[in-house]
Length: 412
Image (cartoon, rainbow, N blue to C red):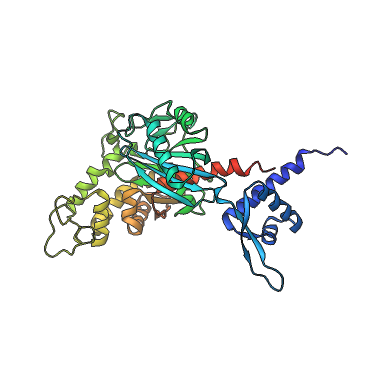
């Protein structure tokens, strides 16, 4: 009988990858624990660990006291075997996070893009500063994922359109790869938030859900069967353009604030709505207790210069118990949630963005109730569960997946 020499090699690769993934998620582990969880014998598990240790991917990270015998060595993935970078690029800032292969964030910095006329130079300079802070070199970064506001063409990976970042255009991705290396990905920011919610937040354990980003701009991140749904042109999730009864249709789609749904829930609309419900930027009234950031419990601000952002107004309404305003905001958000639910029926909607975070569980519950009144599909609506910068956390999730595929998939 003729043996296929590739089969044992393939099995070793599969076993190595399974072991490395277990050490990332559950480690450190003893040889016996690793063998038990992978279904390998102690001898095979020992050979596997020796092979990975020789490749510099695994090391002895400690020991565990046993019974009468000697302590058992604990094995873990070598954190410095690779690093990744996640970035959030905004018109006035670039945030860079660097993580080691285990997912531990070793540095996070925010830099001024210095006008942003040359996006490649700005990103390269920001990454170099992050590397210096992390005390690593640029070649040690195995993957870069950049989150931006705008539409990314899923066929080419390049920017198709970004109103906020006009210098980010077709060709930028190729220039970034020449500057930083081949493993550079540009991704829509709300899609990255969906990855963060799936891995670290309110959608953990759910493979079908939608992230609704509510803030100055509106967006959706759609996860179906555990995969991001971007659409043919990358335009899936541009919910601000959703036609809404009673709101005018846009006559110029190059004006991002002219979409019907954006008119309903954008900054100007919700600010006017807040004013109608007694939430204003008026000076502090003598009977209103001050909050730590200068707002007052009645919903206003202690000084006219501390004008309320939309998120600030929503947060103040939660503190003050202004149920009328919260119900009105929820009714407007429910329009988009209902529209998405009757088309996709995702089962779970995560409210994110400045408004979603400020409203928290109270706003989410009101949106869920409002959706149930107008839609036969009744998804659960929950507030974001991601701490810190959700775009950056999603970028690091994506970068780590790419780097682990590179580093862990060729161990034999």
